[in-house]
Length: 169
Ligand code: S3P
Image (cartoon, rainbow, N blue to C red; front, side, top):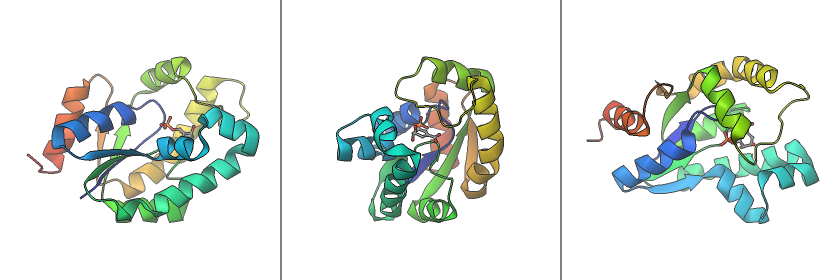
């Protein structure tokens, strides 16, 4: 079985995916990492050179192949849920966990994070996050088996909550 973590940038997907993989002895797979590996470049560089449309095409191809994986924790990019085809392919690949976080936490993590090129033309990061959260929330929820709010919870607590929800231990 695969466990797929979805959610906005800065919700803790990578950290929690790695902790889950370790705890359950599953392999870790990241859609962003695959795209970077294929190009041997950062996401910022790929987007700068080829644009978001190209990045999304690469992302969709990787998502199409997720169902072939066995016993992986899959860490998806925040925009993986944007198309219906991607959402269907994510659903087919395993149990889907939606990680949410409060706006303030997301803002702090993105503000200081690296390799997160702007997603909109909005000048203000706060505006960008709020608009995209609003736009994407329904899409995350539409394929989630359950939701975990990571704000105010340690990585261990979130990991344990996911394992308990999936009846894995
Ligand atoms: C994106 C989120 C990023 C990465 C890319 C686009 C998005 O992944 O896939 O920059 O559209 O929200 P993280 O959610 O891991 O930051």
